[in-house]
Image (cartoon, rainbow over the protein chains, first blue to last red):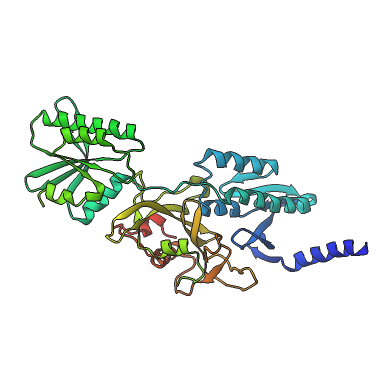
Length: 256
Length: 153
């Protein structure tokens, strides 16, 4: 069984031969022959701030890896809890993006190994995270569309109604003509009906003052949650109800 | 330059016209306090053939790392491309790529990279950003420019 020990010696020797050492001021950076999921070598840094005291650190590698994997430790409690729990298990601390530990000279070997294990464990958080695909808010899409088509418009303008002052998503101007455009986007049919009712109330209340605005409901039909009931409500209180698929109708409604 | 072996899904997103888009809270970019002010995330929208943004958003993450820069374009949890100017890279199989290099999606992961043969300062985060936007077909229509957002060097 002599080869057992020989294999271990060869392995350790090989690891050593494949490890690159460079100095950044008084910090010693070890580029190790262990690869992260992007096939980049992982690095561990050791500095010697005081006699017999050493600092071992990941040089912000872990937080950087997680950041580029789409994980925002600060904004997601699930990840944050796991992140801090792993770090404390290894007795390291997290400060200003860096994971580190101050050790005695006699602990360098074991802490070096712990740092490598810790880095790999933290990388595990970033592998295949389930992150939903973000969507642009419908209002921003409409705003971009209006900009591109050179509409004269303002956003979130206050318009007086009989009982309240209402915030209108978009106020479009064309000479003396003025259109109030409310955009509607919903996650469910009940949400759609509720939103239609709110817009209907706004338009009704504004009409009561008799100021001659053209009232337009622009409906997000990306998902089919706006049903007949919601459309009926909108048609009753709006001059025009336009779906996003037919957005160019807005041009004629607005008199351009 | 797009590698032929980039996954089709990523290639189609990479080639499409895109635009830096204001995020839903109205900011064009924001940074994460614990990582310092050298980290930014921007929303990137795909444009349809008429130039109107689609509903899906991509994210551009850019970071000043050890004085150099890293940038990643991703959708959901899937990275599409990742630019590293801070160190060299070796592809699986041992081919040395050097720096700057760009990791790209192949067989569902970003282990492979190609050398980015372009003339820009590896340490200037704004030059890196500008290069990255151009190479990824991302248009910036922000009137004040992104340089201000990145806070210089």
